[in-house]
Length: 143
Image (tube, rainbow, N blue to C red; front, side, top):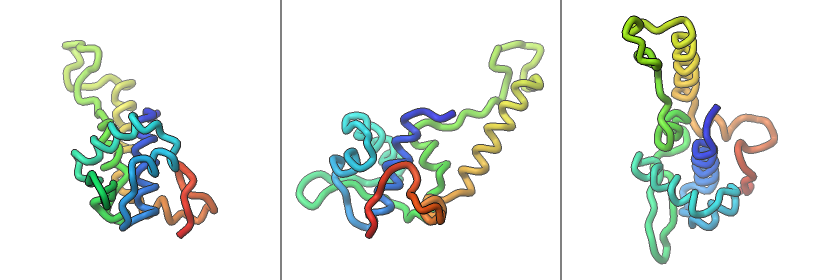
């Protein structure tokens, strides 16, 4: 349902949350999350533009989360790299439909609204705190 880019962004923020408040190098994040470094750099740039992460070059630099995991929603991460698109008018351009969506497109939009609501009400901290015995999305260190 979601792209590899979204998956990679979620892996990256989960890893950074696990290491907060310490900065991590791009190499550390790439290795731990199994994301190719060139792809990760692009993902981190998008997360940076959305003020989810901050990066600093040079000695003592690295990437850190800007928001705490309990304030960062999954929807914010998803929308930073690949915004959820809602259906507002007929995707087929049928003039007779206009803003009155057909039953198929109405249900598709309703499904996207449900996903949007679920992700918007779920924080990164909640995912990381789930008592499943494993961390979401990638292997993490235990502090």
